[in-house]
Length: 151
Image (cartoon, rainbow, N blue to C red; front, side):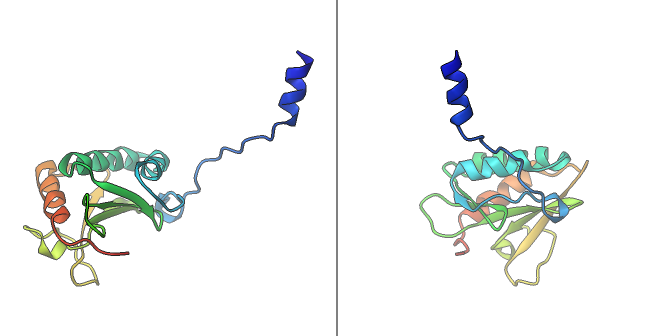
């Protein structure tokens, strides 16, 4: 028993801290490719936004089988399988999740929120508001078939 206690004292403590939340409650997650960094991001999203973010992630996976994922600039990014670039991202703000369609101006119908960037359009998902799942899935599918934004 004394041997186990001595061994335990020699092992360094593992630091496990929650990701830091940036302005608007957006989690600060290290850049990374694949599902794991996106899962870490989703787990760190605070409050009501977490359920919405997880629903959005599941909808992207359902609409685009084999979707590529990454976290860049503290936001999840989604890319079409076998293609370069990214078709969608989202980011937490205080009162909504901002879904970014990088080629949103090419979607039918065009998502509601304009951008200063010519081809980009946004959708804001707010607390308590329902969103049209069929329309959002259609936008996701359309966006995944367009050339991806290279970053």
